[in-house]
Length: 108
Image (cartoon, rainbow, N blue to C red; front, top):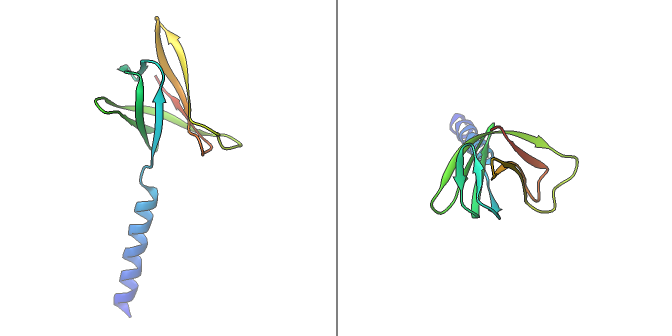
């Protein structure tokens, strides 16, 4: 009986760890843009969110940055990137993740 209880606790722990793992989201940058001081080329990237950090990974580039996760009232229908222009260059201000209520606000 004790072995079954230990097994159930172990499986529960593994299931919780798996459920809390960062899920990658697909994002396309239509323009070269600055993220946390790093210039990313236009193209497809995967964004993994873990707490107040995001890892943006591309084929040849990656950057870790501080973010603030905000939740909207409704799900976003598509993933969109909001930019601002700083010193003649685009800077990523926020990413709204399609199919979720999550908005990632970048703390530059």
